[in-house]
Amino acid sequence: MEGFGWFTYEVTKRLAESHPEHTFIFLFDRPFDPKFVFADNVIPVVLNPPARHPILFYIWFEFSVFNALKKYKADVFFSPDGYLSLRSKVPQIGVIHDLNFEQHPQDVPWVPRTYLKHFFPKFAQKARKIITVSEYSKQDIVERYQINPAKITVAWNGVSPLFQPISEIQKELIRNEFSQGNPYFIFVGALHPRKNIQRLLQAFEKFSNQNGKENLVIVGENLWKKDNSYLEGISENTIAKIHFTGHLPLGKLTHVMAAANCLTYVPYFEGFGIPLVEAMQAGVPIIAGNLTSLPEVCGDAALYVNPLDISEIANAMKEMSENDALRSSLIQKGLKRSENFNWDYTAGIVWDEINSALD
Image 1: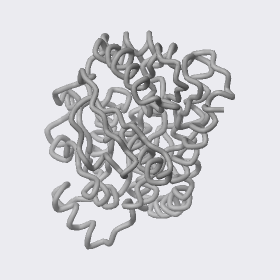
Image 2 (image 1 turned 180 degrees about the vertical axis):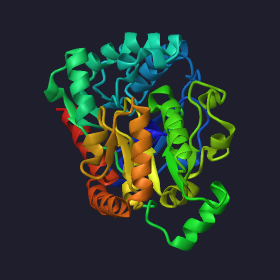
Image 3 (image 1 turned 45 degrees about the horizontal axis):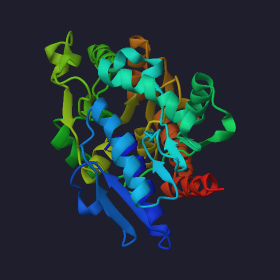
């Protein structure tokens, strides 16, 4: 799961478990895994049709969800990915994580982009309350959709407690499995254009050509592309040092993150960036882009670069590879900074907004 998925999982789990006095109707668009039915007060409901196309989105929210809210006499509808039912009169809370499709529409295919740009301004107006994951995203929503700031509440993402520093012996085992025994930089996230993978790989090649010793591990799956065109123009020598793992289960991801020498996370647009907090809590120093929400999340616990400047990214890799004092300083700052991110706190903010939407 990426950011939306973790937010949904961690928050709804806590809402259901912490409030047994209430009944929660979980709406699914296909058969569900029982692990998502977190408690006895959760009633899972499958609504047709499976909503994996903008036309089906419309049908699902304006007919299936609309009818379900009436059938179950819902007091409030909470949507953790921001899609709402425009026909329903039930108070609604939408979580709008970011407006990438507005800022960089070229990064999203035409059909979903058209849907998002048409409907999300309507969802923002319709919502009784909006929750977002950073002050950056809040300001973006306010300015772009002309929303009263008082209607929007910021709830930072949390982080799994499973992300922790590991021993040198464990690091060696992970390196043998994922990077041919070599120390490595790591990127974690969906391989989406805004994640800036192309420039990251070009910067890594520049770093490698300067006798950089680290490999590069890329964890995540393609979101829109279905090929490895990110590697176009990269030399065979450098490609041999780049390892695409695809999706990793959480138990494995925590160790692959903790064994890294550095997280290289340089998107040119990001609403939050959960891997930043995962790295900080795992004791891994960070090279981060200096745009959008990333400085808000990392504070002083990252080495910042212009994500559009390949040379600057490569120089930061060289600095992080050679400067042990810098790495040590960023690790300590990151461990301290990570204490500000907690899913219990996030879920508490969401619960307060649910209650306030009923006032």
